[in-house]
Image 1 (cartoon, rainbow, N blue to C red):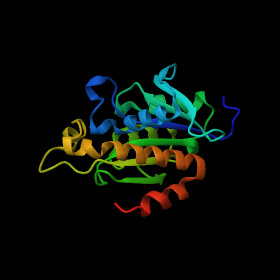
Image 2: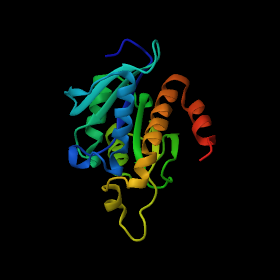
Image 3: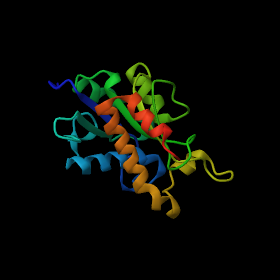
Length: 197
């Protein structure tokens, strides 16, 4: 579909509906809201079981197709594979933004390829796209306190303390997406992996 060769599909993982909107599991979709605000783009319904917003983060810069699957997290693969087909993009033009238990809160890590690490959204995308050859923006949410099960922890809203620094975390993750699209993964890793935590 795109004539422009510098196009990226950016998918923010989460669960649909207002009841989940503030959950840690929905941080990927929160990052997409930040990116859409920067581009003055609005999300609209799309035939791929997603809501989509399109724009550029800078004039003449890469085109970003921001997509939030309408499915639940563990069924993200179907909408993502439909989006790739609709926009005629390969998985190497896909950036998935998601929550990551194994990274401390307020930290971002970037990688390409690899397994799902127990993340059900990633597991379904890997199965649906035939492999893990896409870029991940991993937004750290940290581990649950005490013996709280991880499944409960990710479906809770951020704490009041976390919410104070959440805007800067979302901004950093949005910066990382823009830098990957404009300058490549290595440049973005150099910036975000060497930044003082």
